[in-house]
Image (cartoon, rainbow, N blue to C red; front, side, top):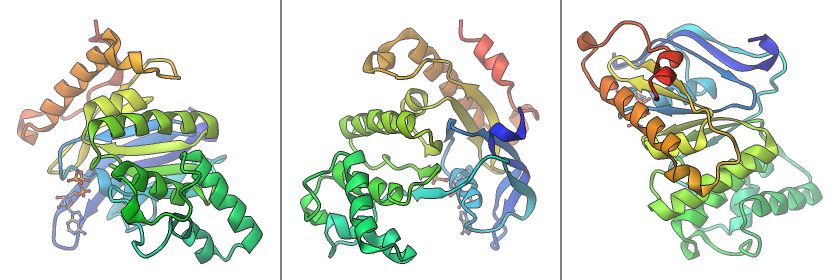
Length: 270
Ligand SMILES: Nc1ncnc2c1ncn2[C@@H]1O[C@H](COP(=O)(O)OP(=O)(O)OP(=O)(O)O)[C@@H](O)[C@H]1O
């Protein structure tokens, strides 16, 4: 892989919080420009810590983060909670990052309109969060992230609190947008089906200490139609991830020391 198509590399990263919790130990991860990578793993395995370190929110204890040459790394973070200002309209919520950046008024108006169109919320500019469904609130939150035209989305379980139907719809819409906009996406989830449906690669992590235990490419073409979700290929990837997760929840003593090779895992599909 040339450095030109690398978005970022985390090398030998460890993170110990001030209370002594070892959140990550010796974690290595390279994400390519334009890739959709999911981080999947049990609670507490350090998925959010990885995202925060990539976003520059907090310092690693050891190791390094290197950005690829061609990558502009204009980042946007999307959290599980929509975290909208309840007293502000949809457009005022989406306006917030632009206001903080001091953008001029005509450009702001256009940027808000574009961001709301991307998430299919035209016509809801004057609505308040209390008038919206959970899925719509999450769309507003995503619009607020997209309004600054990021290259990379760091998404921390953005659809974890939504019902299955809404999650599935937002998954499809996110994939369509990703294909149009050529973002690099790092997506944290607990949900195997979501990870398989969305990703080029799923990185499985284990806890205590947080580390990578499997790195599984999802070799299925895009666009991924709804029938991908019911295909034998989809089921076999879900099974592999389920096995890797079961391994991830074993105690460290029971695990092999090397991460599973992505090719070993792919070869075992049949
Ligand atoms: N600010 C902090 N101070 C101390 N410990 C922390 C802090 N943030 C996270 N941790 C601990 O670090 C470990 C990894 O946390 P992290 O939130 O990264 O995991 P996660 O895989 O994202 O978990 P979840 O899926 O539950 O969100 C956990 O044991 C957590 O309790």
